[in-house]
Image 1 (cartoon, rainbow, N blue to C red):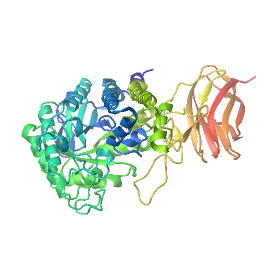
Image 2: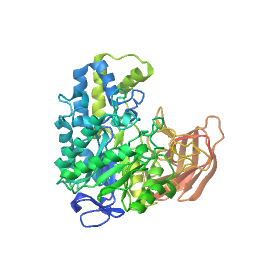
Image 3: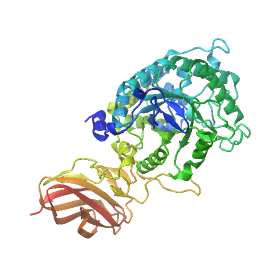
Length: 573
């Protein structure tokens, strides 16, 4: 089944609120409303990696910014082939089918992280100083994306992710070259940002499908104290406020209708000195990663919303486990706050689409990062061509568990089969194909989230193996596929099965104890059917009676310390 077909089967989109067919979005008091004046909850996805490659998305974080990645590619295949590679990248990475899939899954909006270099020249390359050369590539890409969104009544939010000169000390998120003047060090760069936003606003002034303008992504800069490289301690933020008011004024010269979205310093969260606000159609964005999903974690933003009568938007979040996703979305939607996840696709499991890591790509990684053999130009080109094929949605790995966690599990604690398990003589159920659902309902794991921005530090990882699924269950690749490992006392997995041939079965459990004395129990519909079973390498539990129809089997680790690969079913003699 195709990605889109799976998506359609996963989500009943009619239960969700859709987009720009309802007219212009507007800030009204503490909420965003649509054209009819009804509260509108943005449920969006960020398209990181398309216009701007961040190294971690492709396991080349050690190389650094996009311009460094480009240099590494050019060293292998030459500048001409590198230019073709990036042209193809922009053509293949995000297509209409990606938007079709998002709509089928239930999203009503898209956030486009823009690289200014696709819209205008850098200041040092301008033929005439203080003039702006406009490039058609970025505008044409935006037009195409807008058309795809409009076909599904989805909103498109424009996000300046890489500003001229770069807006922070995190170099990767803005493709910043620290040898050149930053946005904050250069008046020419700031003038270019203002001019770019005026140009965009002029182009899209009459487009209700544009949900808003996210004018500067994640500033992170110590204005008063250069040692505050993340900008989290800044008390005044005067240069940031000044630039945002100037951008707003330029936009309002040509566009009176669209929401203007602002982000504080410290990666969008430090609003010291930003108030009072200067426009009546404005939204405060905040970003949330790796902290607890408690009311306290967003209380500062709720306070600002209430004090200044302004809507909030969780403009970026994600990069965690399914449990964390469900909890975070529940938290913000309870307060009528919309959200946008980061991001649609990369090399990894905690996003809807995973880009495959092939042996040819691994060859590039080994050379670039691990002192491996240098590939020939022909080998490198083949690897790049394969990489380009694998960024296409039809070649991505679809993680339906992620989508389920972001939509159905937010609203329901019910479980669903991850795969169809039809039980008859000779059937096999893989251990990693346990049910879809929340922690405590489809499975129980003692470590379900990654917390990395909490104090005191909490050392958790979610899925320790970072493979196959994004739940808390620890899954690793093995020689035959995948298995569940690092099983701890009290953890369990549930499997919904359809028994085609009722009767007594001998069930063989494939496990690996590693010399440990693990024990497990088997339940059927929460009724005990076998207990105190030693988790040896191959365990046969005999004469288990299964009635016809849908049943739920649960494998409970009474004592952990073993791995679990799967179970096979054979009719008892």
